[in-house]
Length: 274
Image (cartoon, rainbow, N blue to C red; front, side, top):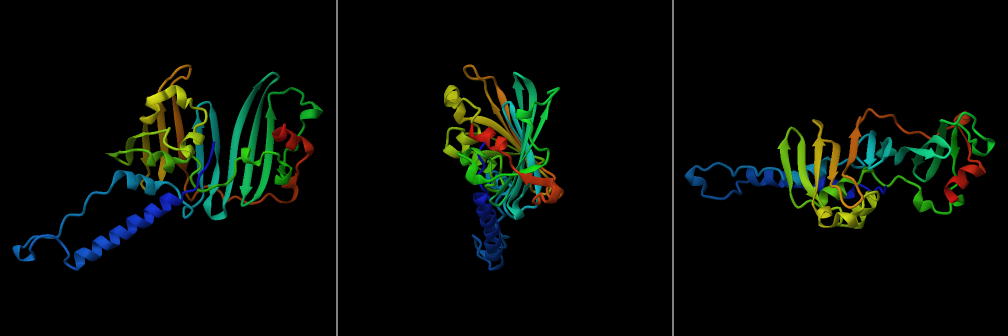
């Protein structure tokens, strides 16, 4: 799953603020339409554009730390993102069938520094070949053959919701903070790489009009975006869900220190280098 930054959403917020200031200034200066001598009042304020309002709700670098959940088909990612510190915890669980066990991976990123923590469950006796420290492991990026495959902090919108919303021709305000629209998952590479578990080729034309529902909280922050992907070919219908929550309540992310961390052993690099 690819992350992109929230630059576009930040610009839209600035544009909306600037437009509001200009509109207020114009009204104060009497720059309305019609003849003032006819006693006409100022022109009514046009309603907010739902798409612009929804994009402005997407988290940006100015937002406080928050938690997130990304459900991409059968994969579920959870974590904490701290835009001010350019930091992120990013966790996923992976099931293995033979032998049967569950592996939990948690990455921590602060700027360019990277740590990894691994938890294995379901194995009665963990063989020496699979034993890894329970502490955070400090990773040397120079020892990773394919660094591009490792998730990294790339902005305040880990679900790439802004890119999805921008593909919609029309967004409808349903009231109570709920918005709906049709997203084009074939529109650009950013959107396609975000939902790599979706067979876009099988979807065909249906991939250009995928229904979504977004919810904005009372504080003006996006809390969820759900895409309802139809069944196509061998692919079952699925929901692609992004949730952002606990704005300002999520813990700050700090570099592990002391007995919380150690250098990553060779096995940690073998897991990713193959």
